[in-house]
Length: 285
Length: 289
Image (cartoon, rainbow over all chains, first blue to last red; front, side):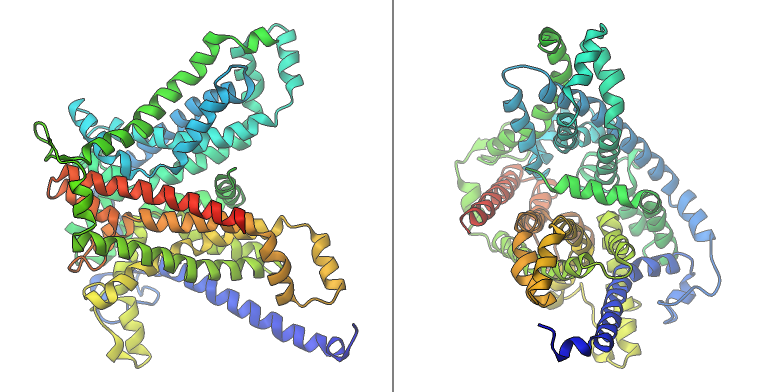
């Protein structure tokens, strides 16, 4: 198969590689430029934005947009609420799902497989179905406009994915570890908490990342169950902020940046882990 | 050993809390929604039973039909525009080009960002007076093309697809990349020995072996299109004149703006069934293939 094309390869390969890199860089630019543009206009004042130079680097970095967004725009409050709701949801999802996944995959009982199937079915249920029934229940329990009105649904809808990921991890833990723990006189609780849990740290990281993303970015429940500014999270807060500062792009931009920065920092620190989590979550069954 | 791990009390303590919260919040509401969907009810007092009237209305009302059509167009755009781009990028990156890890990391960034932020950002891009898009068009001498992208019926729908397609290209790229990377290198070496070109290798070896992950991507993009809410709700709210209405925004406004709880629930049940049916169909299709 060695023909003339093979001889001419070096030059063609070089050109091909160059074009390929050019293409990849263009795509990278398209994927990231809108975000860079957001960072730019979050530091500009109106006169600069509306004078036609909306695209470029800010002439003067206007950090006051950020302080205005945080205090006048109430973003500090929204941010705190998002942190609280997200953190509580992650912790509860981890506690509940890890215990359930352990009992389902490692303990002996008749209905374990049926329970697993039932919980995994939940991955297919869109949250739309629960919106109105939950609204009615939360209303009658006077839980609307509380943190619980978000934490409880977030935990419930986070459970299926978490049980799936943790369960597949538990399955890989060798039986001998548990056996020797029991031989040494550990009960089931002690075996679980001091032998098994420490082993599945990577899965815990995966579930945390997943739950963080879905809670931090969630809108439908947040906009329905809470209308008191005091309890609103960032996604809803951004919507009301845009209404208030409709013509002040700089301040809106600053708010959007503050919403986005935590996610980007987590991603930059843990990008391999985040990418693996997203793959693990998708490749089910 | 067996007695320790068959301890009924321990099993109950481990499983019951999760099972209760899951059933109560995820599963039971489906049945409650189905029940609401056969009522004429505004949330106050008792509703009146109307049978399947709400469903009949959904399939005869032009606004509802438009929303269903839009969600199918959305699904088609995801499958025929977004997925091929993702596949191309995944295949290029998986063939060990320079900067593989860097590009993969960068392409994935938009996936992680809140849809609300994405929607606000794009509403600024599309802004008729000062937006990035119109400014760009004016600078390259195409100012006659500059327009109010989200404010007029003929462009609003396409303009509201693009941010989602843009946001999730990186997600499908990552899944497909992982799928392509998991194929054994020996197969590629064998293909190279036989003199197969890169394109030929991609079409006859890589893509067929990526079938399982392509199925996952197909399911995710179609189901994702049926469920889309945040982006449309923030970007256009379904307007102008319902031009960008999708089932979930229809459901939301029917319930919380016009208090037609029964009709809104019928739409939500329709969304669940739509997702379920298409998941099963795609799985069937890939099995018989």
